[in-house]
Image 1: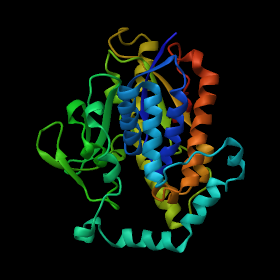
Image 2 (image 1 turned 45 degrees about the vertical axis):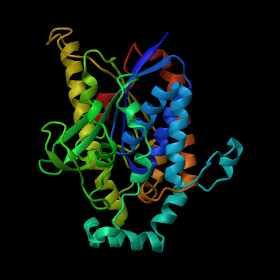
Image 3 (image 1 turned 90 degrees about the horizontal axis):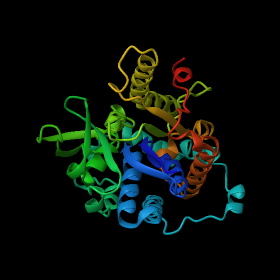
Image 4 (image 1 turned 180 degrees about the vertical axis):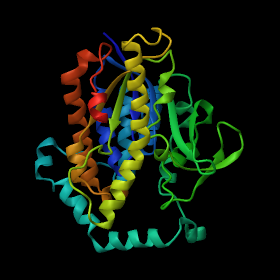
Length: 344
């Protein structure tokens, strides 16, 4: 029996390799059909690779396209690591903290806090440009395959913008991943007004945006791949830890706001306070590994270490595999995310 789902893919820099692993595992399940994708930042890049691959070469084409994107990000042609070797790789949390406290990383962080991205003048270059420009936007914009939505934030009014259909372009992906302390704002045509505007990272207003997936014709099952931990037990005390937690809270705020709205509608429908069918009752599912993400520092979000990326992929595959083992039968039947406990 086919299980039709919508995917909502969070952003989180190079930690988006976790989502790569999740998608790689989901694509192995022939019963799962991806009807729509909403992505922000790294989630937008994963979503673009996923759709382009599906349209061009089906499931295997999507897996190959995702592999290519992350090999490009890591700067390696091949990152395949035998399963038995993962036990011998350095702990990703330890590696992440080592990078965070290294002198080169600290120096780079200081530069980004003191200098605007615009200070580089003609030397400025967005490192994602070379990857995004190689994507096939003919397939990404195609009517075939899953619907695809990319979220960015308008600098001028601070509101969310959704790029879809023929509005999808390399600039839309770059805008969705544009952290203003690292990259110059991306200027492109506003999908709402048609006027050229400046855009920043979509995580500020939708990480990822869920509302495009509320369309009546799309399935009720919404699978969120979360890579920014909702909870952290330890109080951050160092400047990088504090800044990282500020970013996590702000980037999760828009997601939690939309989940609250979904849960509110669910309660209205369950209580019979609104007519059945007048509002869409979504079934929310979540794939995450907060334990791993709590171990990682902000450093490996911006420094794409091949070993950490490979381990994140494997963690994503494990998390998706565990989700399918526990909840495959629930897809299309009932919600598996406890939204009320999430907000308690």
